[in-house]
Length: 152
Image 1 (cartoon, rainbow, N blue to C red):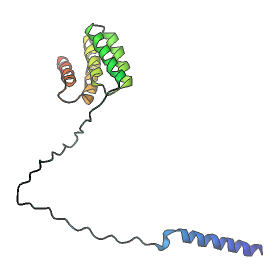
Image 2 (image 1 turned 60 degrees about the vertical axis):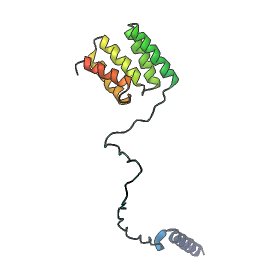
Image 3 (image 1 turned 90 degrees about the vertical axis):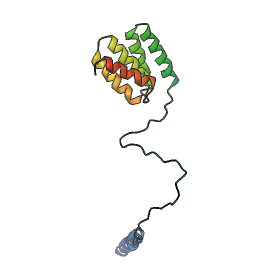
Image 4 (image 1 turned 45 degrees about the vertical axis):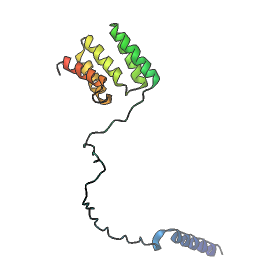
């Protein structure tokens, strides 16, 4: 009697297992792709041409910065203008801990380190700042001027 129960239990498990597997289902064949022909127009298009992005160039979205980082950026700039370079560095670094994309803070750091005679650190912050500064912006121009004054 026990052997019969074991056999029935095993048989039930095997049948349940076989019923749950996709063994009996075959993937449906997919139709072969048909080559598409480009559309030919006889009249000139009135829609403007779409400019494709260049490979390797990623457009930067408009970045809204944290208000605390903006405030610290102003404070660091004022300290730099007051020739408190160490204070400007400390404030700018605090701002970067809040918002690492604030290119103007990298500019303050690059300028302050240049004034303190540390060109390697200044160049490092120029490179980092250029990653986040929009091309053609005042910040990007300032970073490039620092690079030029470093002779690089």
